Amino acid sequence: MLEAYALAPDAFTSSVAERESLPIEWWASRVSEEAGAHELVVGSFLDAEVVGVAGLSFERRERTRHKATLFGMYVRSASRGKGVAKALVAEVLRQALASPRTEIVQLTVTESNSAAVRLYTGCGFVPFGTEPFAVKLGNRFINKVHMWQRVAERAS
Ligand SMILES: CC(C)(COP(=O)(O)OP(=O)(O)OC[C@H]1O[C@@H](n2cnc3c(N)ncnc32)[C@H](O)[C@@H]1OP(=O)(O)O)[C@@H](O)C(=O)NCCC(=O)NCCS
Image 1 (tube, protein in one colour):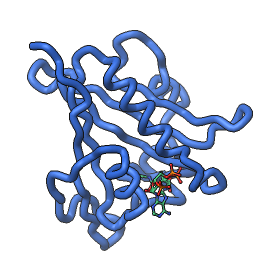
Image 2 (cartoon, rainbow, N blue to C red):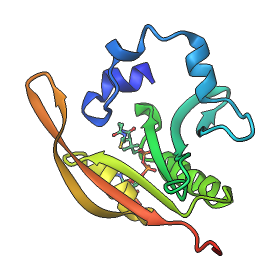
Image 3 (cartoon, rainbow, N blue to C red):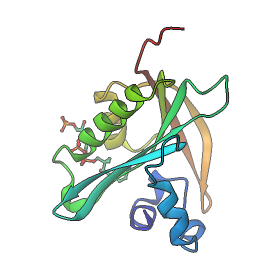
């Protein structure tokens, strides 16, 4: 993820400066497979090396726990254009569907990131608004498009 923040700074709200000093335990907790964890991370591997990642964060409050957020989508440059991201989104959506409370998956994407906007649109996400001035990078502002899709009709 530090590579992702360094090489694609416009795509992420997190920065290397913010994250590089975090202990390895913090990163390990993000990929914990503990039952009931409030987030999960899926990876794409070539041999033993990770080439792509994406996460899903589950809301925990009673009135918002029908929602989850896709985050941290990154594919290393040598593995791009081969369907890795599409497969990661499909797996995140499968995990969302398998999670009993989740009905909606949301995400935000940098407005100018046409590759990612196309990826998400192709995977069924629909934009529902653009947040102006969402992120400040140096003295530049970045707008974020908010997207969503319904993953399941849950019985109430
Ligand atoms: C955006 C990113 C995740 C795409 O990963 P990828 O594995 O190359 O994407 P895929 O090969 O699975 O492509 C899936 C779809 O995404 C879109 N897409 C991917 N790369 C694209 C590009 N360079 N230009 C236009 N569309 C692109 C296409 O719609 C593509 O479907 P198609 O091949 O049927 O046209 C990758 O470029 C990346 O990690 N970028 C830097 C970080 C980033 O922007 N993350 C998103 C944060 S919201």
